[in-house]
Length: 144
Ligand code: SF4
Ligand code: SF4
Picture 1: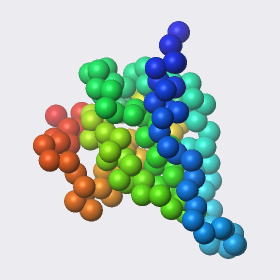
Picture 2: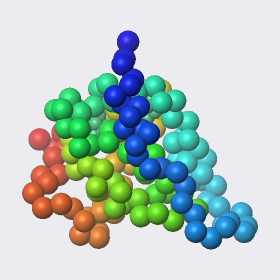
Picture 3: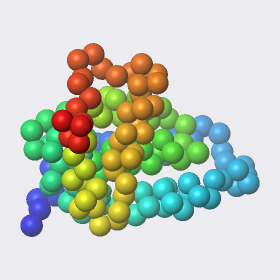
Picture 4: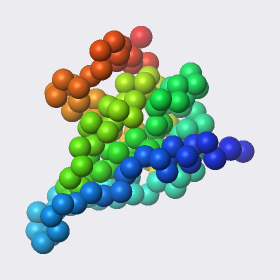
């Protein structure tokens, strides 16, 4: 049994509502592969909180990290062609480098969300923009 309450708080506090400045006028530019293989899967999060229960970063009691479920939704918005908020910046301020890349969240996720790939994508995007915080060691479970 999982106490979902403290985890749900992180989900609710993370602003992942779509932010669109210009109304969407046409659907001709939709990347259907991206839509069906990634966005649709991310949309299937069941909010079961299993990923929070096994998260190595949260087990270190590092509550500055929003956790895998909410971070996957940040990635969802980053990939969403109709979302116009800066999700890379959001990921950085939400503790993307607190993650130790252990992959446990992905192993337990019943919705088969590719957490590790998404976490790596957000980190890469942040590094391209020199947004990696000073002193973050970019720890990778599999490389240590
Ligand atoms: S384990 Fe998967 S389905 Fe469950 S909350 Fe985490 S991301 Fe969502
Ligand atoms: S990969 Fe990162 S987010 Fe997923 S369980 Fe490990 S520390 Fe948590």
